[in-house]
Length: 116
Length: 107
Image (cartoon, rainbow over the protein chains, first blue to last red):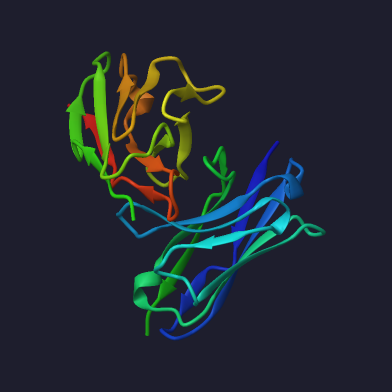
């Protein structure tokens, strides 16, 4: 069974940093692209970042480019999102999702709250 | 960025009704469009990929059509478990973008 389990969310002050993790199981991790998608409470979905198959090419939304870094560790079957210089606009539930052009599996999400 | 305009933003319908949601792109995106369902407190679920393809395990009452800039998502006979928010999503060009969603609730 494919599972994606996010962790690392929490309350962080503006300007702070946080690293999200997404532990994957039930599939060959290195054979899939993976993405982070976020959702502001009560609002819609925003694509954040994608990493290509085997940890190849990376892509970022303009809103996070230069502040967020996506990476993966094939030995640990884990996806990461390093988030720096956080602002209140980054407050959201962050989902990891499997796939490049469409995402057939999603995690349950982890809430990041940026507030003083 | 490619803007995806969904309509309506919300609708009320009864079990058994036919429901149609449209998604308009402000640039040509060929067939590079997906539809997701999101129930309250849950992660999005893939229903339709590449405009018309039904994801494995998704009931056949869901369907998608369109290409270019205009797309349609249809539920042929609404069931109680279909009350949710539906999003279109384009992957023609980075950054990937979503529509704002259509909330389907009970009339």
